[in-house]
Image 1 (cartoon, rainbow, N blue to C red):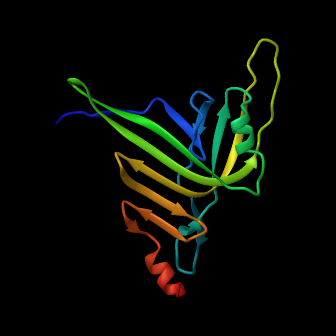
Image 2 (spheres, rainbow, N blue to C red; image 1 turned 180 degrees about the horizontal axis):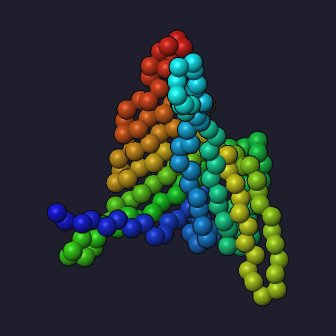
Length: 172
């Protein structure tokens, strides 16, 4: 059995198609957060948590300085922006680097927190902005892994619609 080691150690950020190469120090792309509800009933020896929907998700962008493009993208909660985070997933085996695969995350959302700016002598200013995410897509090697859109009631994993029966039951 051969061991494959995958590493993703860097990325680039785009906002509404504009390249922000080198402007972000750190990016946190959200995963799906399941909202759980307690279920307890007579005769049960314990309490069970069952899925009750998807919780809100958010992304964080730590900027390495003050950039006009980033400031404008995070200026208003009334305008949605499209963010793209792109990285190269490197695969290593016993013979060294054997593959480089694109990892892409597409996010659409609006400002939640533009971030504070702290000034410190001789240090570069940084700030962290938070985005309320309404739409999230993840691709690895061009294959869609995840598609989630809270406004359209869409949630697919590996091409399988996780909400098809739910929408049918609601008549939508």
